[in-house]
Length: 488
Image 1: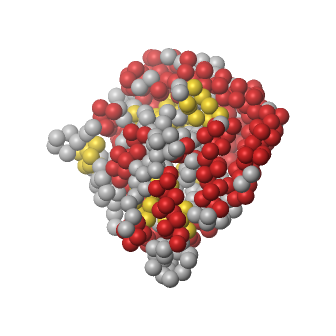
Image 2: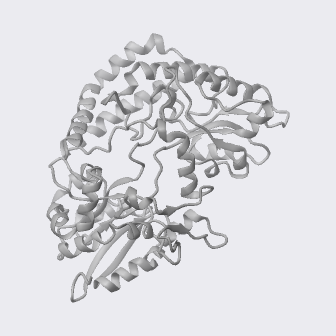
Image 3: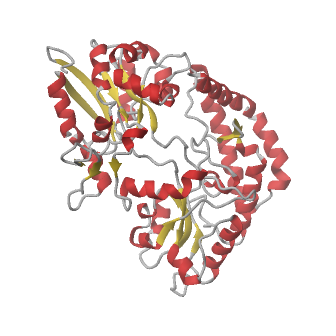
């Protein structure tokens, strides 16, 4: 410091959810960086509500800011199809970014994640601090279990028996047969089918099985899972509106004012959705499948790695300055201050070198406070596994609670299909292929769960998928996987 002797101004664009605004710019770490670096930041903060229209105009006009922060702005296809407006950053990482360079050496995943199909790096990655390995975990109504003298289910047979008891024995005690044993979104293939080894983190119907990519909607495991789900549905153990309800309808059931209605579901944390009934629910270990094994959706390396968190445009007149400025974010202390808020206002640094989160102001949730105080999920960061040992979170709430619950599932987390990138040609083919194929899979899934018939229709289903171009789609996924794995 300073990065430059004479002040330089960078125009920096970032996207914020809804009406969050620009309060994060008051973060003391960001303000100190501006003072100490001599790099002045002209923040351009756009609401996610307005961004789609503004993005189209910006790309058409070519009037771009110097730097873009956060992966909400431009996704992989935006970048791949507009490479002429984004700078390759490999040389800047090498000469101007010692913090990021060291991070890549420690966590090679950062390089894999950020290397585009042409072998160059156009966007910078992040590793968020103190993230769990597990995604959505099984959540059950503990009060209902206790009332009926039942234990938390460990196998799919246990789960069937518990759901049946929830349906038949009035566990909410209101004298009505209004209990819904299992209710969730329509994404049955990534939740209820987890015991069958189907853990689709990317939402593209790909999993990694025995170290190889596998398209599971044509697998024996998927067929078995559908048959099991139909059995539950036929006996009234799955919400009859699972395939038709929107999030508003589901929330109304979860937070029904008169009595708890839902027995079992999958969720990030129980307190996130059940409102007045939250204390009745607990997260449990993954349910063992027919093979006796447990499978948990997530990522063994942690749900912490991101890409497209920094882009430097070709219109930026001081790219080396922009790179050196961005590199300041890739230290442990910088990362936690840009995830939770500044030391002294959101974070307490203890005398022993550990860090703890302060309590949010009265009337404000911790999560809302962190978003107001920092870039939060977006922007460059690198909290190393070693640095994370010094972060002490409250295990009973917020981010600390998720790490506590992660202890139940992390040993069973499967290796996900990686966050691969595609070529411009592949991006041109993907929308047509996936629109037809995924629509057909969704409609057959709903039919098979609600009405059955999978045995009689399976061969015709696979044949139709192949006629729709499934072989070409799988080749695109496999080629992208091979490129990702080849990056060193």
